[in-house]
Length: 423
Image (cartoon, rainbow, N blue to C red; front, side):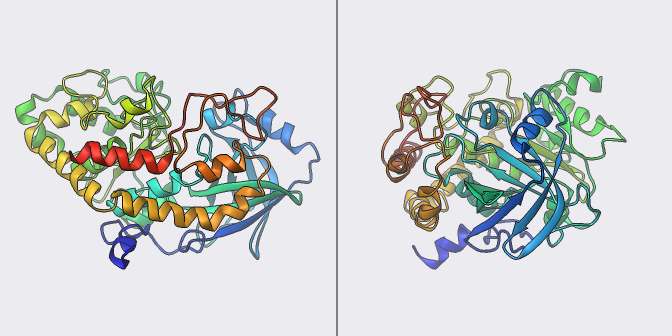
């Protein structure tokens, strides 16, 4: 791979929004993360703290990352499908260094995520998607890897993922940023439903400024997006929305067939109201099922041949796509972005080389992970072989399979998708 193409794939690549340096994410490495619980029944305590709760409780844990110690940190389980459908005990975690000890931060960072690579035998989807997003100028979390030990037992290889919070967006957009951060969850379709914020609380979560509980900025944006006549939409929406970032984000999700997102399932994203220019900008989240894993009932061939514009206007239900792309200039720009993505940072030669580089780095940690969702052979074959619905990994219970259907061989999918998009 040329040095130029490699620079495009770094988290602070020349097209990206520069993130502040941080040892957790600056270099390719597998961090050693050791968690020590004083509660011998920690697993069941975490379960009781998490299951059935909208706001899960934390418990205390001592954390060591390399030579850095964080006593009395807070920890809880996290995830939806990655928790409920993961066929074993290797659940994902959220860790707050400063939950119980004020100002206990890792070089300014208070919260990290340890994600369990749910439905990804390759162990690269989440990291490479986020790298490409950042290279495209989309504000996206940074990711590295963690070999996690719990009470001295190797618990497996995880993605160590940056938390989307004030620390992240002040680092990307400026120290004065303190805007509203909305998460599209459980199904934030961005349709306008009137002025009552209680209606929107069923589909979105306000992650910052909860005490103020002011939803007027989101509601006004949705009103403009959904009700402005098409001929007037560009002039009305651009003061409220970073259209360039949105078009890049939508093009990336389509190109990578990341359908467990706003494009498909209608969630796994944030909108941050950036105070510096009073516009919303997107932040992607949870792309572990990119490159055709979340299939929405489609075959692998149908996913490879997913329309470059999906859903196609005037289909209802995804106005951020259908309304924006009904504006000819925006549609042209979106398709141009997809072409540039395919020819640049998303070219198969670039993506596959990066994926293989990362897989070589984590191979030993994966092979020693006895709680992972897939077998060692499935990891080795993940770039070329489809993992079927009835092939359990070592972490699965007897008779357990892989939920959600077939997982495409990653290199084969990447190359076939590229050929379809550029034809």
